[in-house]
Image 1 (spheres, rainbow, N blue to C red):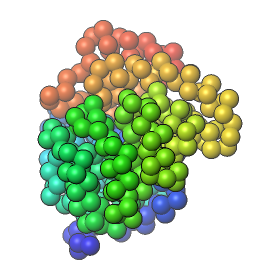
Image 2 (image 1 turned 120 degrees about the horizontal axis):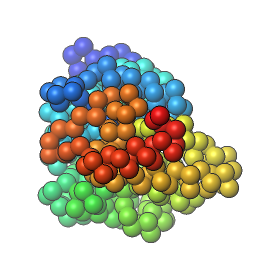
Image 3 (image 1 turned 45 degrees about the vertical axis):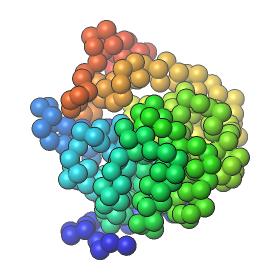
Amino acid sequence: MSAPAEGAPRVPRAATLDHLRGSITPLPTPFTADGAAVDAAALRALVEFQIAGGSHGVGCTGTTGEPTSLTLAERQAVIRAVVEAAAGRVPVLAGTGSNNTAESIALTRYAADVGADAVLVVAPYHVRPTQDGLFEHFRAVASAVELPVMLYNIPGRAGVNVLSETQRRVRAACPNVFGVKEANADFAQVSHDLAVCGRDWRVFSGIEALCFPMLALGGAGHVSATGNVAPRELAALYDLAAAGRWDEARDLHFRLLALNEVLFIETNPGPVKFLLGAMGLCQPTLRLPLAPPAPASAARIRAVAREYGLVP
């Protein structure tokens, strides 16, 4: 392991691996109004909103956090700020993946040093590695730390699917790799993940409409952008399923459907940030090449948000 980062916060980790379940909300990265800097005060407020809403954990610098628009120093600062704000009250899942293996290793070591509970390592985007390349990338990152590692399979953005067999190989090679976030439109793969990797392999939904179905198959939870505006409901979805209250969980799934859909009316995190801005929780500022939702999309987001009582 690397030496602790200079001035690293001495914050106790929130949980053992057993507690990495449920609704882990992937936070956006709030910026100042001009987009020039990360708004640290707003970031802390978002963490508090999640904890007050009952989320089982918080994530940062994943897809919803605009990681490709952040400098390496900014990603480190966001991870550290979220760990400090959470202060051991809920687990922190830090997004440390990139399409550069050395950078992913450095970020993962940093996250471990400053007290993150686990890391989320995305399949390298743009380069479209083979399955062997994916295996070696994940093995290199996971082997650099003792911290729990969650793989992140998002074929629509990465351009490559992390096959179930590749997940199995990574798990066999790296004992600290404990699960996968499946943002995969091929829902059938979830069954194969669990069949090939073992029923104790923790599969988290990364697609909002599939949160309930994945729980029904034996999923461990969800990492849902909708949790940013409705943390209590996303936490309840997991809690109801875990308690075997399937009819209530199913009803909640259908109640959330319209909100889930409108938050992806344009590229994430644009709609989520727009709504958080309307709720007064942070500036809706995005960094290029992302752009604010078009007027018609913004009107639709507001209309649906009013139906859920999120805005006046």
